[in-house]
Length: 383
Ligand SMILES: *Cc1c(COP(=O)(O)O)cnc(C)c1O
Image (cartoon, rainbow, N blue to C red; front, side):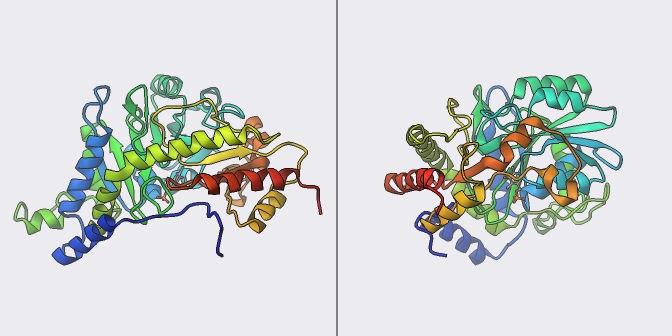
């Protein structure tokens, strides 16, 4: 499909390609110097006076990052994990992977699509072991309230910061407020390694456990043994193989270097979208008054009530060459998870949610095409 404006457009630079080629030349492909450098650079980038010691653990993707985070926080069979329903299904799947039950919370309002702390508080039970809070589209969720609720209940707060690498709130990096933060480097995220993820924590013992569990529960790595630092290993507890490889780590390092600039470009595009969308009658833009060092990962809008249904709008935009997406169909409406609810805010907005194209190099002209096509799709008389 030759889109005039695709939903996302990945642009790799010469330094990205060179970084990967350099690893191939050296022919050490997993768990070596690039992983160490990528983890160190990511941890340093998230370090602030409010969170002065951050450790980062690179993994295969953000879904296993969630699984690893929950497992390292002791989530197991019979436990409950509270997650918003308005998020990617990985948040619920990871809980199930641990043998736990996902419990779905509502979001704050039609302006703030992050998890509602009051809804979380109502869903706490003696079986609750963790709360997953998603920084939807890179906007910080209600961290102060969530931290208080989780601390009082003695449950782990896990930040799903898949949309928010290098984003911050009150000068502190997202991902460093809770017990654990997780990031995604999937192809269409703010930075990419193709598939990839990162787990961060301020807790040294937890970091050690995450590292051990990432690699089968083993005490040493093949790279440590290669360097002569060790020749034997023990297995401390049953673990996983969730290791990232050197090729991805090298790509990640190159991407991380450009991330501040590309996040700033995303912000610029989002602010311009808000300005243009204000003139489209009936379109509601959530988070419209939120500005800061955020992830600006997506541009979700709410279609007007009583207008054409979302399917029609998406079809009309497709006919105009414009690709749109949906973030998200609520998890509790999928067959595998149905039955939860009611979630009044989520249920009210879900059928009318639409995400517009966004990438750092989206041009003014293409952005104007998107906005014009949206107005046309919503207000055109039915054929
Ligand atoms: C992309 C995404 C994930 C999963 O990330 P993968 O790296 O693709 O496994 C989890 N949560 C959210 C909010 C995401 O957007």
